[in-house]
Length: 141
Picture 1: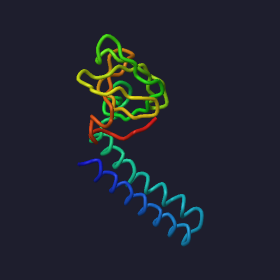
Picture 2: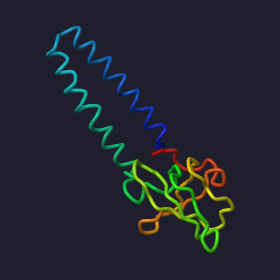
Picture 3: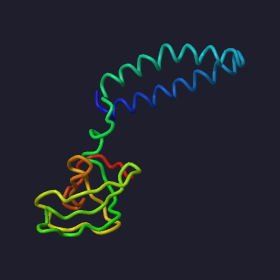
């Protein structure tokens, strides 16, 4: 099941739960609302949560960084070669040391956006967004 389809299902389930809980509150008062929410939690949310957990793996830590969009906070400076150019970027709320991906033609400047390609220790390997295309997630800062 695709992420888009899972998101559509989740929004539909939330709308159905809201309508059911609202109707129960109108018909039976606060106790009806409480009962409807309890039933919906057991019947709807838990199985859907299990399905979501099973089909969409969590991406945390190092696994979440490749493909993310990051903002340059310290312009890249060339070293002995273009591949050795280093700078600092801001991604997921943290500052990271970064170096350019081999084969990169331009040096990103302060305020421009780059894509994270790999993680090497505490350094992120990046390429300018104009060269990396539209592939990857568009999570900023």
